[in-house]
Length: 426
Image (cartoon, rainbow, N blue to C red; front, side):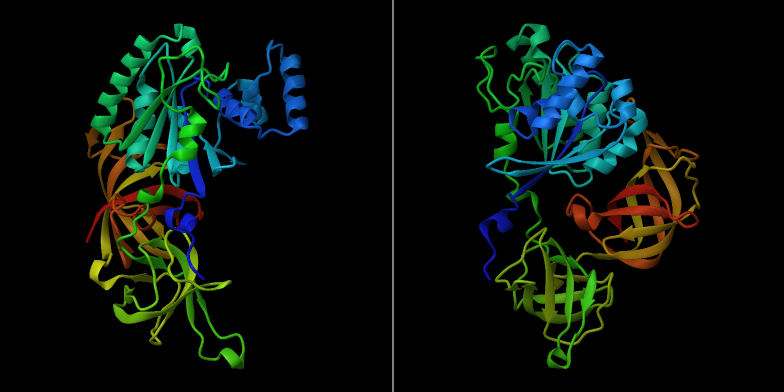
């Protein structure tokens, strides 16, 4: 079976994350996107109309579509990550609606960790504020390939082109400093629907795409690492009958490269070598497999391969490391102290480790580094050193998000307490 062009370019699904400050209109924007792209059922619309009337909003409050938790509706804020899917004729979307408040930094990191594109909202009256820079910083450290800055509430600045250009200049400066790659600013009014799904007659000076047009057409093929072959073994498939007594396959999700029969392969951390005999799915053999396809790899030789091992290109192999330097978002109410023992979960492999050193922490308000803090508090982002009891097979996060990311788990309570990105390894 041939791999399809959609699978090769991975354009079928776009993962989005949204973030914005209080009252920037994020929930309204998402509601407008769903409403104008006809993603709302009749009974849903009737419900928000009735709720809007009961609340005395004076209009159909589309924010009610996304502020799903009762506490969110009552407070008028987003406090948790909510995942929603929708489909247009051109593309499928999975949207992570993340809270924007500084005390929910861990929630945004969670929602943004798998995103292909971030939508960062700002109020045209306020321009680039502290939270805009903070959300941009998180998008940068998570290496989100594409960013859209939704310059909202343009109706409240008279749809001024001059004001939009001022904000564009501010964004350019911040994006350059943070190292964001592909940033596009779109002027809009989520409340009125200008430039969300449909174009705006009020802003004839803007000649770019609407938000939905941009989301439907953003190119994702170049975001995947197609140079370095990586597959973390999730499951070893053994014979299920005497007829298939010699069958052995290694199932997992392709994390990098293009896999074909005949490719040389190294099994890490053991170092055993073989060649790919076949690349298969439940539908049969494939000509090629690319990220993020889930496949089974069969090898020509009978090697000792188990869950947690990494299959890779021996000429472009990842690092087998016992020490990691990483950017870490601390997610626990309990402070992190140097010397804390943790469990490190990376791809399909789990090892014990110790946080040997906290090198620096980011002042989330100023984005300046604070060297050698005594401890990390909930939502802190820091540079740390980890020592591992057993080796992990990693890449720097900047080279491969799938093989450069990990989580930390508390040994005692089995809670996820941190999310990390490998900077370097040895």
